Amino acid sequence: MTMAEHRSRLRILDELDAPMLWTEIEARQPRAATVLARPTPWRHRAPTIVVAVAVAVAGTLFAVRALAPTGRVASLDTSTWSTREIVEMRLAFSYPSEWHLQPVDERLGRAEMIGSVVSNIDHRFLHPDLGPNSSTSAWDLRGLPDDAVVLSIEHVEAIGLPPRGDTDRPLDLDRAQRSVGQYVDPGWVGRWLPFGLAGMHDSVFFLFGPEATEHDREVARRIVASIRPIPG
Amino acid sequence: VVQDAPVTEAKRALERVYVEQGAKLWRALVAYTGDPDLASDSLAESFAQALARGTAIREPGSWVWTAAFRIATGQLKERGRTLSSPAPERTTHLPEPIADLIAALVQISPKQRMAVVLHDYADRPTDEVARAIGASRATVHVHLSKGRRRLRQLLGDDDG
Image 1 (cartoon, rainbow over the protein chains, first blue to last red):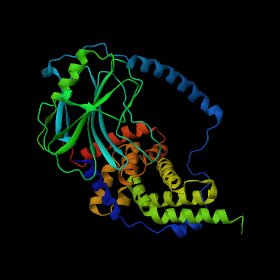
Image 2: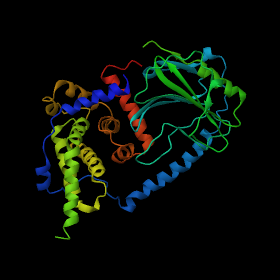
Image 3: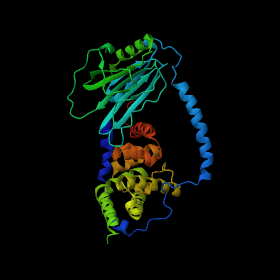
Image 4: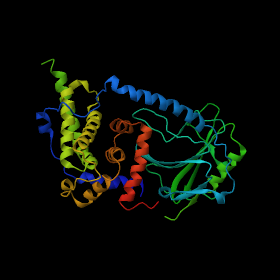
């Protein structure tokens, strides 16, 4: 089921007849003990603060370790790799089990973004916070380790794009173009490889850190080359 | 009269919010609670609270959505309703497709359900959903992803 179908299914709720409550609202005396965000007395917060500090310290230590390279070298033998199917994109790809995969299925303003981020670092990828009225499908890739390799295989559902012919496979990462408007550290260059598959407009955004090994770059190339359609 | 003017203006602004968004908010609350009566009470209470606060509320639209869902959550806890029971006595008179949808919704966790209903049905911004749930934006996205997947499974159309 696509995001559009998911939303369409929820819109059946619009058939419910809502009661007219304004007259009741005007006459209503608000309850004194309504459950809203109520301030908690400081003494009640003390245990929470202690726990929060402990968690923050542990989290910092964990983040330092998690952002470091995994230390395990991924096999280049794609027959041993895991398979990720993205039904909404009608595609599958393979990736080594030593790498990390983050599924993507989210709404950005009026657009839907589906896909997966694959990386040689264990990191939770987020979009930059552009405030309440703006959003972007770009990832915030600042502050990553110098040997990071990040691939985002993604589909952003936009309005008005005609069906696209399929791109010749296997996809070749070396044919990617320089990406602009990305959130990366100075000196880092993101690249972008658009492609058509099963009539859809998809793309791979990728980023190699300046110290990324040739081995990990080759893993990335093979991941992209493994992108294939699945039966609709 | 001069002193009352801002209060009157605040009330008008709130009434405008009700006219434009009240029905959608009520339906979203029904989807979240599975209970039309509880939805009505939560909605009315949130607007009544907003009226009492007058000009102290800068964004009444966002405020009543967040307050209504927090009130509904509190009401559910007070009633001891786990929402693994979909309040069948309340939903039986709903049209069948809607009752089926709500029956599925009440089987996913409250935070996932709130995220799906507010974000995917009501088109509320992620920041507001995060405030209603009491979580970060990133956590909201996790709730959304898991909630959508679970809902698809429950409705029998998860092919992945």
